Image (spheres, rainbow, N blue to C red):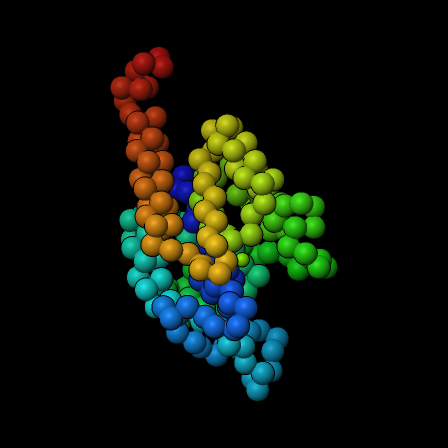
Length: 191
Ligand SMILES: [Mg+2]
């Protein structure tokens, strides 16, 4: 099974503005109208046009199954992806919990849902909002033999080229590992 590439948006593709409201020079401003909002109340966002090609490079390796994992939900596919030139990608259908913090139980609110959604699938997950408990969850998955990698950009900078490189290297490593596990030699050794 190909690992999933779970992609968050806020703090990852859309970095948080500085205290004075400035956004990175690398990012272009756009106005979008999220689902449920009236057309005369658009939301201003900022995206780095280099992130579309960077994500496409990862997708084209064929080593990962990309999935949005964001509170933008379906709007990630219909509003954000097209602004980066991305094809329609599926999204994790996250619940809408009544919470005032992103860590209501000390860990990322998305995690229980993602954990159930993934089952035993390998995954690399890019999100700016993991806590130490999420990193422990990742370590426990790896210990169970489920390749897992959490990538945590600084939310004021968003995802960086080195993060994409890390994802790419990890995907190749997992792929190589799986190939060796299923090789005839290995099966012969096991027999
Ligand atoms: Mg985020």
